[in-house]
Image (cartoon, rainbow, N blue to C red):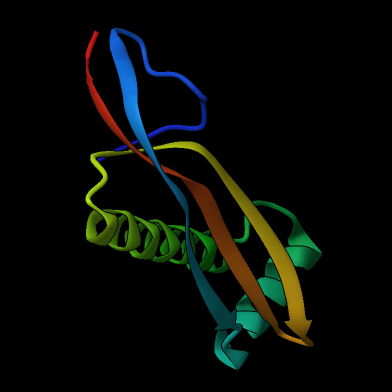
Length: 106
């Protein structure tokens, strides 16, 4: 499945638009990781624990969006966007949305 943030794909044409697809996940922080992140906050530098958490969340949202598009019969997703929102203290949602399409060579 080709997933892109653009609305067009080079050398391809969209033959059918199937509609909006999405994938989301809600993740909570882990107290042990919060302690390590707090220490990193004092000395500075990348907070690897949170970077790994957001990367895993992003892959899960993409997988869920691709699954939904596949069920519709799509072979590509265009105009993909990500958004996050805080659900409660220590937990956040990551949402991926895009447009499921069928493409073919131009």
